[in-house]
Image (cartoon, rainbow, N blue to C red):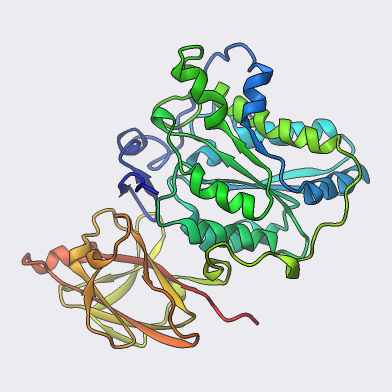
Length: 405
């Protein structure tokens, strides 16, 4: 699969593409998202909606949620994704696609107490999603989850996306999962990679790209009616995404009584890997160095903790356990040639030796023996003065392939 776009960082752990960096600098990453209302064109034709319905998958889990709603029990909906899911550029919270999906569920089941947990985080992809989903979403025990990362992922994210999906499906409450594929300019996205995962787990899949791009390319619909910039939907775009999702739900709702879905133990073997299904994410404040020469724990102006090096020769080491390790930096100016790392005493190497997208979330190690390991990080000045080292900020580390309890 060909590489996705290079990534830039604006603040904290936020990861965005070059396509959207300039636009987002003044909006959702540095302050409240500016709402952009749009006059909705005519309703989407039935054939356009039908084209979006890539696969109904196995609807058993979704119909099980409908059965619960019919009984009048409380329902929790969940969404996880990037800035689109967060609601960027929707004129109101209710105008975003999650808000509209919530309205549809409440209209179908007026006797039900239905709430929405929105775990969208602007500019982040499924790798970071796999690290935070347990705390940000699964702790709320959702019944139905929409996953939207098709415009944020890169060619290296297949394992992470699969691990994210497996984490959700493995919950004891057996939540239903639906994959949503949005698009960036010229109809691009990472749908091909993610759809393979969806097919492997027999998930419902909906493609905003497949529905709208042929119409836009042919001139029958206007890009600006549905997309504000190169990726973020207008109100009409959010409405279209919601309609495509609810069309899939509506079909399942009318299918009939649910059969009992498979239990967690019956999850199929991983398509690629289950390493990101078993993760342990530790933010900087929870990290306890086993060695520290010249690093300090501090807070940025938003109160986010990070470890930073006070000198160009600072070294720090942490112990961890698992078969792989992911590090997350928070500074936009991370130069991969300026940080060297070592795992379990191996020779130091620079981050730019890793064949991964240029972004501050990097896999340092994989396929190690299960058990305890040590990672060491060292700053270099790259021929500059010591002050250049102080822009290195370690946001946290994550063990992947963690041993199961």
